[in-house]
Amino acid sequence: MKIHDLTPAKGSSKKRHRVGRGIAGKGGKTAGRGTKGQKARDTIPAGFEGGQLPLMQRLPKLKGFTNPFRVEYTPVNLDALGDLGLAEVTPEILVAHGLVGKNELVKILGRGEISSAVSVKAHAWSASAEAKITAAGGSLEKVDLPFAVRPAAKGNAHTNR
Image (cartoon, rainbow, N blue to C red):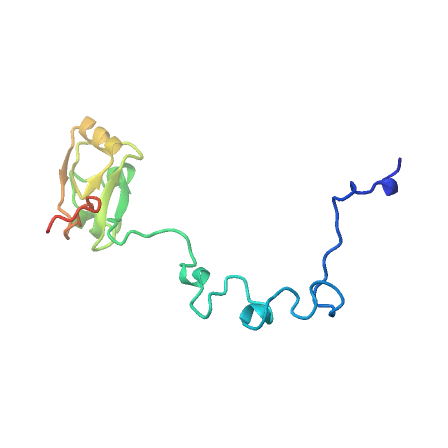
């Protein structure tokens, strides 16, 4: 047996039914499309919704979600604090040394080591930074955020009814 001897199993393949080729056989004249109307005429694009803006155009193009209420911090690592060589660090001092921008929130992160006791005032800090600062004899003080943070939503419960 050779490859040119192979044929499909009997009855498994049929010729395509070509409609709209005259009145001689089934599928002549209206070719199974009924009479009149949009579907009886030329092709309709996939996803066409009768002039309504199609679903694929109504959906946003890019994926994902950006939380408009997120709180974004500027990170400052311990090695940067150690390079300053100061006994007290505040957001204003960090702005003066060019480590953060003027109205940015500061978060202290634990990369690097700190040898001297430093009093740090910041908006937030990581657990590793807190452990290293307190181990060196320093202290941490939380600075209030300059704006009210929106509280987390509590499901769909309506409280004012």
